[in-house]
Image (cartoon, rainbow, N blue to C red):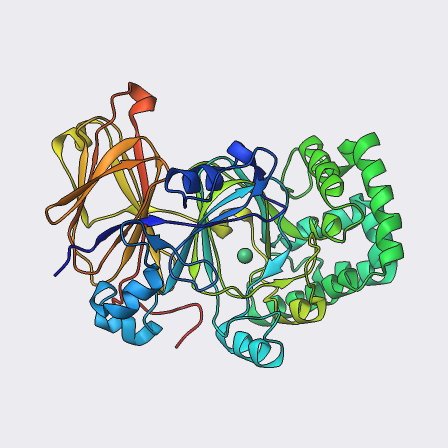
Length: 461
Ligand SMILES: [Zn+2]
């Protein structure tokens, strides 16, 4: 049998929100293994590098120029028969690099049942019948919005930000305040449900604001941000607000309004957690979780699907009605939205790797379609040997130089190179860099799927 190590040529999308020219990691990575007609244009935005078999932009085997989708359909052993049977002869996940210059649409991804309904009703706007849980790992410092804020924070903003209160109306604001007051942190099920109902009602009122009212409110909001940023912060002695830095918060509002003038998103901001991730930090979004990415370069892994329900910060099709109905209205502090990586037990490090504090960290969301391992090999000669797994992997290098070996085939690896590794293959990566200290780190991300009977807690099967 042919050795299942393929270097991939991956396409990059040019959405408006992408970073421009060489600033975009997605573009630079694509350029390392470019199709003959591809060159990074200095003025053009590059948003997403796609690694996988999704038919909208399937990756290609560099050597044969065949699409990875073709290859795995012809040779199901590359995926493992189990995975091939379960997921219809394509990769269960889609792996991406996103380079974000300006905010992406406020969105949520439907669960399986809703995805089937939406796809049947409106296949043009909902091209898949699959769910799309997704995980984000920061490559450079990242900002985003994720999940609803703790209720006390929303109450705080209703008091502190006058244009917000005016936009939703005093009646809706008061109703919400009365409903949740004193119960914000309760974990009694009935009370939590009542809180969620109050949140749903207030959020729906906000989302149904007229364009004229949104425009007026946005002008007032930006004036407030410019003239008295301190009013965005927490009154001392009150419950903690995030971010705790009012000047930062006000400047983000100004930035968002410049990117999307008079957009409801500038007010949705006060309902959602503002989350910052340092490189290597991650968050996981369940089906029906509301989110928006604001800036940074990230590795993203998702179930192979392209379904998005949007409601702000976007020129694309918006479906406010579906969005406000589908959301779970779970509210929680930022820390609960983050996903903590843990040591990956199935990679063996050599002595050089150990002595240089090299590591393999596993990001393992509670679904079966994918997990990701980030490996930092911190000195020349540091090596990690991955046990064979019963499923396919895709590996991308984001820093340094090294090699990848499967069977008796060894290939050079540089920043931006992408490889496919077939099921049941042992895979070895090694740092071959010649830099010093920080310059000599060789970083790879490996997305993989293995059906290990792990319970699918999020969506159920
Ligand atoms: Zn998303």
